Structure formats: structure tokens, C-alpha cells
Image 1 (cartoon, rainbow, N blue to C red):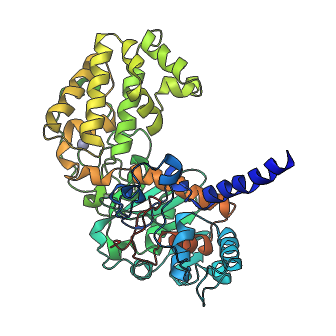
Image 2 (tube, rainbow, N blue to C red; image 1 turned 135 degrees about the horizontal axis):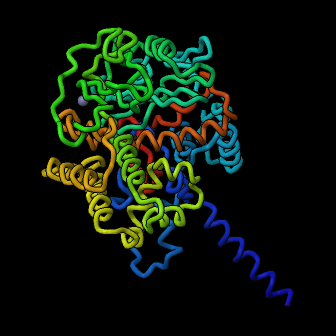
Length: 460
Ligand SMILES: [Zn+2]
């Protein structure tokens, strides 16, 4: 009996060891966008299964290329720690373990990770409760971007009562997003936004701006809340309900004069730079749809049952987030709970989400949007400012709306969350620089397996 066990033990250990060296698909669950466009895993040139077609699943996960071990140099180890999304401390542990096995090239420093962000630190400052990047051109260069063109980027400002974040998103979403400014102390108000724009030197770069409509009000000096003239483009009267759904053309807003038509401050940016935000338009449409539903009807009831986590107040007010809307769109039973008018409105809303507000823009998008507007009208929806933008200013949505989708902004939230946890919510220049370090890539070698990161330079 003992003999059998002795034979079994090493075998088992061997198996454990094999699985331990396989790449961990960590980033499949938590994708971290970085600064390189990465090759798709499917175009892997060195797939071992070409050689052994009868390989079982376990074996096909092993990708050996040479029997001679190759040691890691610093750049390779840096990229590995990025792919595995390791903290400074974890990276140091990994380096130390590899060193114990003599797997590091001479000159590779284990302690490098303690201060790995140091080359990026000089681009960040901290003043008056605000951490920000004061030299974006230099930062981009240091991160490995060969050419920085401001028009390729858009500014995303996310604010709440708790924090204010500015992020640069790449138009086309090819590169990772860069945190530009952050504060947990500054209040969300006109003067604060003005200060932040000044610190990040907005006027030198003049990026397009994609923000929710509350932030648009700050940026253009418009009065917040439910005002009579909330539109940034025309003098649509939000209170003139008799003309809603009937009149499309309203007098244009020629200028933004302080003291007139709900303009209370000087505009901080040019109006032309504002992109109407697709995600917020989508949330706005959902809100009007839900608010128009019969509160005792099966469709409204169905949402309540399907989403018990949603409070009654939010449900009644039609306040949903992106993932919740996606959940309902995917649910075939939802549509069965609807009467004919509701079904018309819902399916046409889904068509707008899929063919206009998302990544894909259909050629006949005007028709699709108009169909939705008509079915919303039939359902008895109110005309809100967001609905008005579709009704009267469809031509003001950028041609490449899909490239401006806010999905990347949503993803940035997820990514930065890991960093926030790691730094225990302590936003400082080290955290901002370390996040940017994690987006860099030091080797331009194509790996057979990589995390789905996006970063700066293209991998050969
Ligand atoms: Zn308007």
C-alpha cells in the first residue's frame, strides 16, 4: 500500500506543477486596457496542436517552444506582471521566485517594482485636493505612443457627489484610457470644473468632450435642473408640452449670452466640442419608456420581479444602468409581458440601441430613430431633453458615433476599481503614474497568449 502511494505522489505533484505554470486567464474576467493593440489569440502562429492533433485538452494548453529555458529580462518580466495585473508587491514576489530558480537574466532587478512608476511620476502633480497630469504630450510619449494627435482623443468627465474624474479615451477605442485628473474633495460645480480644465490645460488640446448632460451644463455655463431652455443647440421649450412631438424645428441658440435663456456663466469650452453622449441618451430613452408603462400592467410588474435589486423608487422613475438595460434586451420573456403598443416601443428602442447608439451604425438609422420616436409618442412617453436631441438634432451626432461609445468609459471604471482597491482609495500621483505604467508595454514581441490588453505601440 505504501509503495503505491509513493508512486502516486510524484505523479500528482507533477500534474499540479504543470497546471501552475500555465498562463492564468486572469484578464478574461477583468480586462485591463493598456497601450498596445494586441494580436488576437486565434492568430497564434505557434500553436502546438498543429503538431499533435490528438492532444487532449490538458496537453493543448501547454505551449512549449524550446527545450532550452529562456530567462526573463527586465522588459519581459515587466510585461508579464502587467499581463497578470500584479501589484508592486506581487510583482516583486514573482521576480524573487523566478530568481530563486535562476530564471532571470543578469541585471534584472527584483526591487525595480517598488518604484516602477518613477519614470511617469514627473508628469503628475498634486495641488489643492486635485491630482492631475500637467504634461499630457510628455506622458503619452513616455508611455510609448509614437504620435499624439489631440483629435484622436476625447475627454470623459465623470462626476458624482463623491468624486470627480477626468479620463482621456481613444476615439476608436484602440488604446487604453488615461486618467488625467482626480479628486475626492472638490465639489461638483462650475468653478471646480473650470479649475480642472485649467490644470489639465484643456485649451492646448481642445479634445472632443463626451459627458452626461449635467456636466454639459457646467461646461457651457447653463443653469442646471429642469429649466425652460435646456438644449445647447436650440431654444426648445421644455414646458411647451402642446408642441412636443409636433414641432421639430425650434429657433437656433445663436450664442450663449450670460443672463439669457438659462445661461448663467461663461462657457468653459466651445459648443462644437460637445458630443451628445450615446449612453446617456440610451438611459434617457429607457427612462421615458418605463415611466410611460401602466404601473399595474404585466410589463411593469415583470421588470419588478426580474430585477428585485431595483428599488421601487428607481423602477417608477425609470432609472436603469447600462447592464440592466442589456439584461432586459436579452430576455425573451420580457417581450411576452407587453401589449402591442409597448412591444412596438420596446422593439424600436432596441433597434435604436443596436443600430445607432452602439458600436454599429446602420445606413438607415434615420428611419430607425424616427420609427422609435413615433412608437414612443403612441405609448404616451414624455418628450425629454434626451428624446429631443434625437428628434431635432440627429444630424449633430458624430458620424463615427460607435467610436465614441461610452463602453470604454464603463470599462475604465472597472479597471480603475482594481487600482483604487490596491491603493486603498488613496488617489495620489503614485497611483496615477502606476496605473499608466500598467498600460505600457516594453517588449514588442508577439506572445502566443496574452491578456486582452490595449496599449500604445502596435505589437509586431
Ligand atoms: Zn434643441
